[in-house]
Amino acid sequence: MINTGMDSTNINSLPHNGTATSIAAGLSMEEIAVQDRVLILRRLVKIEPEGSTADAMQVYLMLQHQSNSPRFTELEDDGLVYNTKAKRPTRSGRGAFIRRPTPLGISAIEEGWYRGDRINKTKRESHTAVMRGALAEALRGWASNTTDPVQLARIAVLEHLTKVS
Image (cartoon, rainbow, N blue to C red; front, side, top):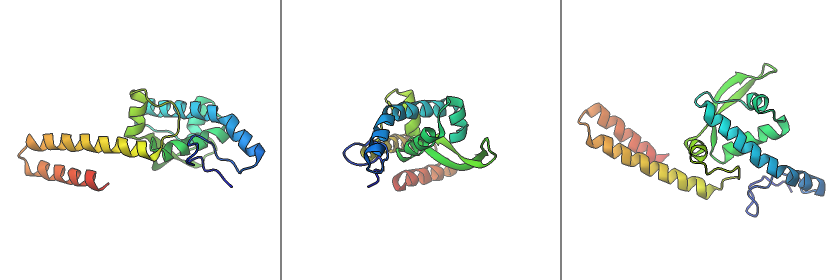
């Protein structure tokens, strides 16, 4: 059985194939994975809005590819970074996706609450709801300060998008 790292018993567990050797390897890497997630997210926030490829981050932080690339995937799965779909060349000349921090990822670093643990879906959804509420409140404030029909139409579209997305 493959552990995806998102099981209900240990959200921080790294993937393994169920054999004793694979489980031991995953356990031995968990502390390093936690540290690497923090290092990568901190760096992405620092260089925002530039973003980074996993290859460039590997070079900058002097990480191994086998431990670097999966951390990007985990950060993306946790809603802390997103794939811009734009590409930059790697050291080998191939195109690699650029990832940037999400608003959740930025606040995680700036507010100092992120310690590298995997974030469960409930926490992500809670933060998203708070962010949507703050946005809706800001939009209502802007709408009350303008009579320009174009601005009011833009605000209405943004309000709709915050409810739908």
